[in-house]
Length: 446
Image (cartoon, rainbow, N blue to C red; front, side, top):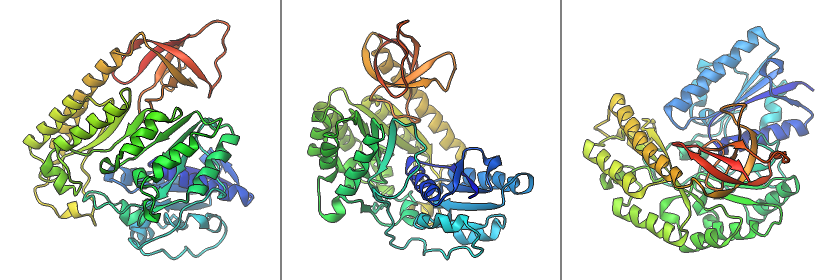
């Protein structure tokens, strides 16, 4: 069978979709290659979340199309969110592409890669969809052997005015408890030590089939699997942080003391326009409640600046909020005007230059906070997952403590370890911190 190359763009949820497609192709006898120039078919799994992601997807498709003229590539398949949202436009503008697959058609990847000439008919964008993979769905993981993403739900019903995910991913639907647990048990048998639970809204897991505390129960069950060392949860919604969830994080030894909590803003006016509700005080109370229950927890959040109607006063309130809460890790996005969303119709758009300035100011403020918090770690010893040579320099090794998510947060750069020790990738070691930077730490294995 022919060789197939993959380019996966966007978030970890998209990566899981790519892993499923690769798994199905490998099961069907295809060879998966990491070298696009060797591939007879290239699959581009696209992201359509914000303008920058959409542009990256288009640029990548055009780059791959060049290989049709200069390399072995005979067939291009484009999949994912961008297809689900702009299928008809893409068909007209990209004649080089042989096949388009939406987010709910990824099971058809084998047919897409074969010699079938007629593209699959699209599902109706925005309709209720039902696809979600199961524990016995073949997957070819693209993550390191010691970690894996596990998608626990698909879709989203939140009314956030800036977000197009419901248009691309459909309504919220959880995987069954047994399906998730079986998958994690299988991953543990394969040597996985860190499982990262993901969804568009992880905090609502199980709610659609009547389980209010589904996520808490799932974490508790995974915590009993012997060889799993870390359980991490991404994408929790601020209004669904229950006491039981916090209790499980606090009491489950294997649950990382790490909370990914996208807040988006602090101004009540902007939060109302975002259709998220709450205000600065209610969010501050939430952060206080989290830290009171789990004193050493790492809190990561994201914000959007330049939202329609955001004034300098709104922005200053956000900056003040960030100073007061002293988050450990912060990501900041400039608002992306997405057609089909409620925010697209809002007046008082903020110009791009102002939005970029505000982003730079907020990131600068957070850098000060991050460096100060990191300085407090000097002299402390952390249990660290060793990940091998640092991506920043081949003269250093790197690893992560439980408050650092791979490819999102900083690293611990390891510059020293005992002479008689040969640290192994995927193993845990005690690392003493010797130096602090804005986002990374430096330490030595002891």
